Image (cartoon, rainbow, N blue to C red):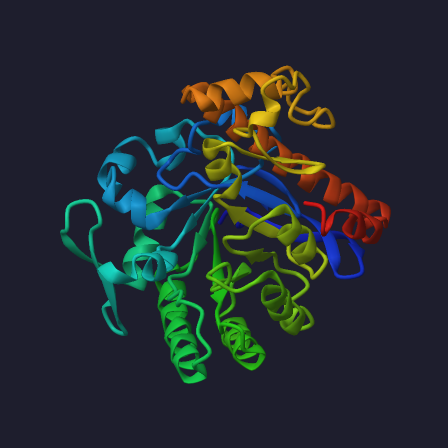
Length: 370
């Protein structure tokens, strides 16, 4: 019987910040890592070859959206999501639990049945149970599968959060049972508990008993401020297993990432770099730039002269300002790629500084700048 092709090892530590290596049958992933988001089988406004050229080692796709369009049958007929979208790097799929919150007006949660959705596309009713979520993710041929969970909105009502934690534990057990033993795939559990330290620890301990290949923190980036998020990470960082990857879901800004790495997080995803790129907001080593601003009309300097890995600094702020203010799609494509590239260069610098033992200085230099 072939050995399971998923493994994680910590390479170096700088206090809680750490570098590591995730090994998958489809390729290795250096951590800390940022995963560009390809919700519907595409990283918006970017060719997958260009996304890879920035240094991206893994991308994220979404079970709920792909289930609706184009549907699992079409993707399976293409040989799986990698073949369907011409992607040869690992793919992580979100379980659909986030849509329980983001589309809360279109669904209701039933403990036994799962999340009962009314499609935002055509109004049809369907049920996304833990078993169905895992079935779809396995059909997509995802490399890292997420257990089905319930992501709830930020609330101070502790009993509501506790009930959700108990539900998520039950769904995690069902997800693990359906997932079974996979030789080439990994299954991550999702820690919930809102802003309550004791509930976060309870959720983690429940998941540790089930045993997963990695552990994600969900239910953040749902309305809390950065300090609240960091407080959650500070409250649980001493309890997270050392030999498993730690994934902070849906986060975030460069500053969020730097602060979370400082608290031991290994994996990140967020729509921010691509969504911002489509609307004219650029991330740079000197902070954020709204390229639509009239002050850039005669500025022939590049967006960020310090970005070197991908040849995007040949396009001037003047030119990009023109593209956005005339609604030319090339502007969105160039700035999206710039932002994806910036995030990958950010992660590379984070890894270098952790390995060199200088991450503290890097953190202090950029935590309030980016």
